Amino acid sequence: MNNVKHKPMKWTTPITIKEAKGYLHHGSPILSVGSCFADHVADYLSKAKFDIVQNPFGTLYNPESIAMALQRLMSGTPYTQEELSKSGNLWYSYHHHGKFSQTSADATLQHINKAFTEGAEILPRCERLIITFGTSYVYRLASNGMTVANCHKQPATLFTRTRLQVDEIVSLWEPLLQQIGQYAPSCKVLFTVSPIRHLSDGAHENQLSKSTLLLAIDALCKCYSDMCNYFPAYEIVLDELRDYRFYAEDMAHPSAQAIAYVCQRLADSYFTDTTCTIAEECLKINRSMQHRPLNGTDNDNYRKFLNSLIDKMQQIAERYPVVSFQQEIEIVKQKLLQ
Image (cartoon, rainbow, N blue to C red):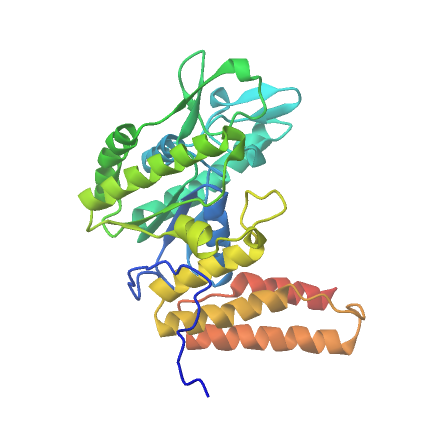
């Protein structure tokens, strides 16, 4: 009989993350700004009932646009119609994502400034600022050199395109971090790089872009080690989950499973046991809120389910005062009245 013991085979390359239990916790105001991967992380934290405002300018991809957004939030200056542009029947802002575009200037400004106010209000008391860089390529208006957050499908001839260099990003963000430290003294910055591949730039160009971001963040974290940290979302997806089954159909965006895995690694690294417990209970409530009854809503079983859901939310809020389900309870009460 062969008694030789074999080591278990490794089917992945685990990414080492320096744990900081309690770095993220309920009741700590968080602002998340950056690429669409920032939205995925912010959605997870929001469903887990963290106090978070996500992307008040919509999805922002490059370090320069993200810096401009934070500077504008600290200025507290809302947007005016003079800062909008119009194409066809849509009004839009070159500082914002297209989700803010509307068919009237007033509606566009209302949408923009509502989100702006939420971001401006949380930033001074912000304890965690999650910044996700997506690309180091920037587009600037050829007419005046202004960096745009989004080209809004306008003709390419209106823009010039360039890739930011490491020293340019560092030179831009060093004084910005100092300003944030004075404006929000309790704020710690968590940098990430989006694992979404910008294949329209070309495979090699995308790697150059991501490498530029990684080097710039590394320099900033070394210079501001007391304020800045890096979470390796990019490395987790590309190395630890090195398989196309963890990508969506476009082979560029992470799949839902990959996003969930990255969020779990985030929780494992930065949540205490108590935070994990609160988050899981809140996530269960969120899943229950999405429930769609098979037999319709006009029956006693569904009403019992809704009343039970209200009871669960009230019990969690009583056990953990940092959590509020006021909005969710009102939604469920409205369903009971229907």
